Image (cartoon, rainbow, N blue to C red; front, side, top):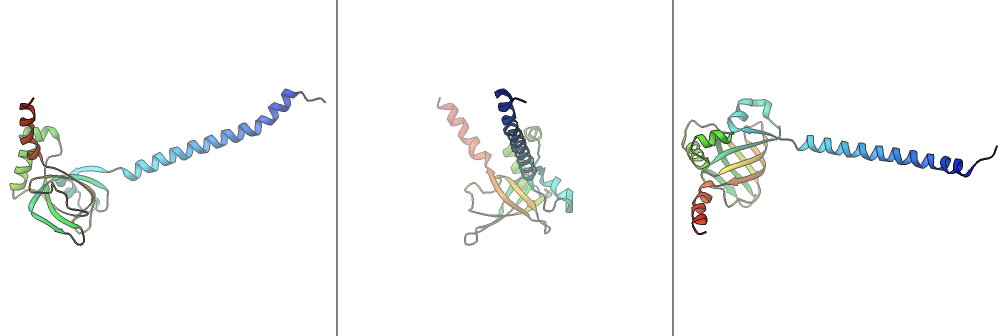
Length: 174
């Protein structure tokens, strides 16, 4: 039996092609695995403070994102340990509701002056942000502890009155 050059080339390519397909399949499986585990590990739910409180013990330890108004009198910062403690109060989670109540500045002011507003104590470790003040909007990512304190890993702040005062001047100068 004689073997043609084409048959030899085809036979030699089969193992290489098989290795290529197996390697490609493993690479694809690894990429899919990384995407799924990364997405599952970083997913957080957004709650208002009232919604988080209503969940009770089922919310403990779950990674969540919340937003609330800062109560200025509650801010305590230890520069030695970089521990920041403050209390946030509930604000609406829907932009349409915020707009209907007169905008973010009005909502933050109303929340901080309402003695019946749902409150949540927060602890954060890191430098004290410059925008942390009374009636600032705090957007926090972290988890609720069994002690009822929200342990924030990330802290973002908005101070709407600071920017609202600057906008008319910017538009008038043009």
